[in-house]
Length: 469
Image (cartoon, rainbow, N blue to C red; front, side):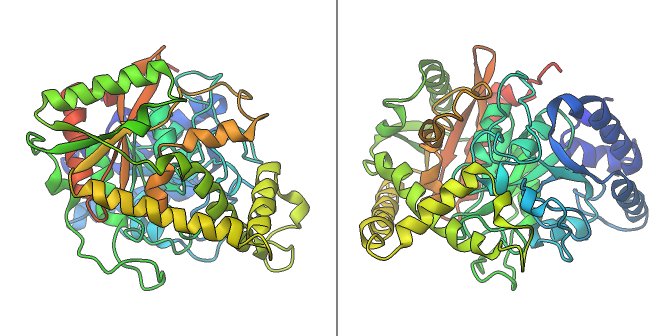
């Protein structure tokens, strides 16, 4: 039994049956990290001592009480999620020495069931980027091709899970930052409905867009993690008081008779031919499983990137104003180029004389996009298409042209602007590189996403493919 290759479900079953201990599982992961992470750069901070303490505690809990499926399972946490007494940098020099005095609710809920923290993963600085090249503390590479990016901003989390350096990970998604790296690294990435998971203790990028979610080896694993981290939080005013289902109950059902909307705008200009062919094959598989493919249109999608890159930087400029070298972190000269670019863009869009022309107009178009999605969801159960328009690209390929990097978010930003849930599931390979299928559903309908994604995963098995490091 190769312990690091176990899925979350398999690890829980092995722990439950006393075939392995959490300490053995944790030690195996720490050994693999020591062997492989020098070439990958997935982790910014390792917490080996804490992990072994938590593993021993988990073993005791499993001996003496009824426990959760996450108890004793080793996980990685994106380094924008606060972890008490563990360095949290947001990938920035401004916070490279920052140690929080409290934990984010999403992590605290894992800690409460004694999930093992292996360490904090790399990201684009303050989660601003689609490649993890913008991290001020080093780069992460794609386990499938060491010359290519793992996606971003949750690139460290996706690379860690893909390379078996963690059983699962937490990421954050502001415009696709869980789904796009999941697509690039051949893992599952789930962005829940806005408000489903608390944002308390997550270093804010854009408050109306940010959402925490799992990056996992399988759809079932993502559902198991969501079961624990989701739910109302009194410390977060945007956290919703919604009934919390057992998300695993949606798995295993047939998709026969389900209606899957395919927006024509997701298959137009800018979509690489190889990605298009792979995703069309995935859609054909869903049709083969009994789902109906229905052509739909989301005309405002073409404006989504422009809307996102006005609303997001405006919120960034407000949120990052606190980093003044007095209250938080070091001085502002330590911000990286991409962070400065977004602060300036946001400040300009919010300034007197430009607010109505830019920010207010973007907010109105955001509402139009929301309304279009609501109309489409009256006709279909989920929307399907590519997660990313391109295959994982090489380092440096897009950094000289930020606009081309921004366009990598074209299919993912709509879910954040509308606050709906979305998932990326492995859909196959093109030129030896992973391609993701993205599914989107209406608010609070993560169950539909998980049902369709799980049925597809079981019928294809792409998620079982592993990079050869």
